[in-house]
Length: 230
Length: 390
Image 1: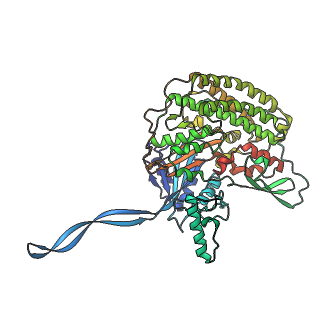
Image 2: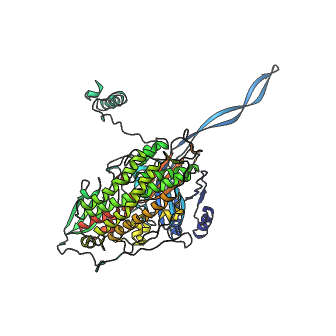
């Protein structure tokens, strides 16, 4: 079997402007992966499936991964011009100060595909694609036209993570119901306050119930006192 | 690799085209099969459109049993998810344990002692035998033979579950494997009891086959129905007995040789036609191969520890990285994909459920068939809803 680097070279030789990046995996499993550019992903996937030597005809697994926005605190050395009195004379002195600066690294959603070859009995080859951000630019090309196996799994990633797979034949929610709004597998998903799951709420549930009731009252102004808040 | 292709005997006229009833007057009947339908093995719905008796569209609807297993596992430590994997495919909890343990062991580079590997093989193959026996039992039940074949299967399954109970404390929710070995050692009396059960299995399979394999009704209802072409099966990610019944020679025990499967001699049964009968036959033959693996493993099992002494139990925090581990579970390829960020919980925990992915081609197999055959085709896929919906 070709190593991941050799596979990358083969892709670059066959698909112009493939834009494939090598992603190392430091774990002992050493399953390194290839990051595909969404624009050329279909061409690369078709090549991986149809190439006689690679022959990745079996798409085993599709997973979504959520990488939320990260706030990174960095220590930066900043040089200030300070006026100081040295030996009775006012002088301009340079002073180095440590400052903590915060910046937000924008997150993304990722789709990870595990490929095997049944014809050649090798694998896995891990390929991944990243969306531009987590809010509006969440479209990735669907690989269902290349591997049917992705049909339900991409629907699941769409349902639970909110990645929109362009070109998917039937992109609907699969596990949650149709009217559901959010994407539960995202790291910042807030579960609904199930304030009435106990008939006689107490402790945590009571607190949640009271918060829920007060919110409802605030909303319409005439909310009735629920039994939970008495 | 020693692989023998096993051809199945066919009755006359097995490949006749499906009989389309003449009353198809162009009026479409939409029918929801499920979620409470005895043939769905749980809560699962198929939205079927019928032209007369003929299926012209079938859309599976999932999620009635969804509990977001993956999210819950991401909020718990690595070990805390082990008992929860039992609840995925509750017929095969020990296979699920093994798949998860294998993925974590890959993630941290953990070795497993030899005796523990033997115990894992013994338990996984016992699981396969009882799963295949009961899945055939359910299939026959759906053909209208209520009870008898299923009870034959359950009689044998109960003996195997007794073994599980005496070893792990639970019939079905075993929670037995750990990262780097197994929870407790097997005793000599347990091994003797296991040998006794395994010695009785060939007779059970013979009996089962004498009862079913050449049964006229079974052949008439199964042969040539629900045909799955090998190219489509591979492209749609179908795995396990379903894939092999379509004639694709792919068994992860032979390909990956995980654990110690390279030490055992066994064959991979393959089907010829990819219909329901081949799936039935492949399962029967796989039971026989599992029995030969069990005999070899129970003969050769060495003494020694069942947990790696260097296995880290407290403060288990894998280094950042990711791993995908998979095994040949009785229903197909069961895989776990884990991403670690160095914390005590997995950053990403993904189950590759064979039951869900094997249903991708359900519509393709059912189109043009009679509505009564849908029940059989669905039954021949062999799914468990706990794993489909997670």
